[in-house]
Image 1 (tube, rainbow, N blue to C red):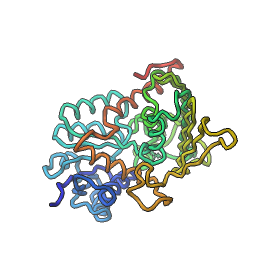
Image 2 (image 1 turned 180 degrees about the vertical axis):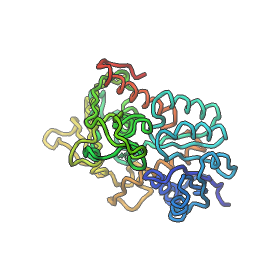
Image 3 (image 1 turned 30 degrees about the vertical axis):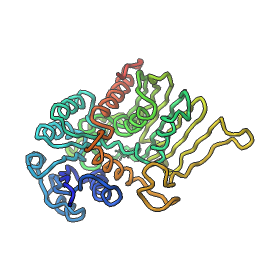
Image 4 (image 1 turned 135 degrees about the vertical axis):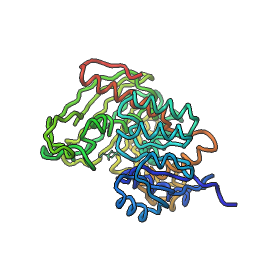
Length: 378
Ligand code: SOE
């Protein structure tokens, strides 16, 4: 018997539209899913480009207005891969139309927007998820398994950073395609909502809730030409942010992110120090989990570099043979697969409600950057 379809309406054909489309195409080839994803429609304002995208990825049809997409009765799931200022309106309309909703991170431009989105999906009772993909890199998933298994014991420290260097040029404009991340009205914030949101999502998944934060933020280039108006306008986003945090479990954290770290394109690292053991992970070497266990025998005790490619490592039995790598794109594939698997049982995380908690932390970080005070994140 053929499987029931999961008919997807994708909004947005940029970088994330590509990662999500690839994930839905790949997931059923490697995972045994209860429903068969179908790329039913792509929606974007530029019809010619949407048609070219549809042809490349195999979408069955094209819409140029997301309202028309949401109104279609041959769509089960709306996936939002458009800029952050579109998330709230589309997600709420999709939920009200009874569609499942997946949304690229961050959920809203701030927690107030996200709160409304959570209320909408919960009222409609529709499945929902936010694409915080890094949780599903096998080495990061292994870190979660080790922590949940108690291998680290009591956790004292959490340390994360996410570094890039693509906005250093002062003549880089803000706004418009590819550069909307520099426009506060579209993005909501700078590195805090774009990059630290990933670090916070992973951190709270691995180590529980964050209670309080104190931050410093900076905008190094204060004015940039706006692509859409042609005028030089103030820059409202945070170019860099560093903050301290206290977790509910008593551990302390430092987080840092910038788009001004010359030489770093996307360096996301995290380190956790527990009573018995420590772990370290680096996106640039994403298959490795560095692990130190103080309980190891003294003379051979040291950092082990676990190549997370064996059949008993998270997700890896679904891929090639032990020792062979997968990459960044497969973290999205895992997420698509888990979402579909969760439709028949426990909903896969992070749900909108989980992502709202991340947005509460980013709001508190930005507030602290302005106030210079410790702020509560709950
Ligand atoms: C920004 O450059 C960006 O593309 C983020 O928006 C993504 O979420 C991150 O994973 C990589 O960097």
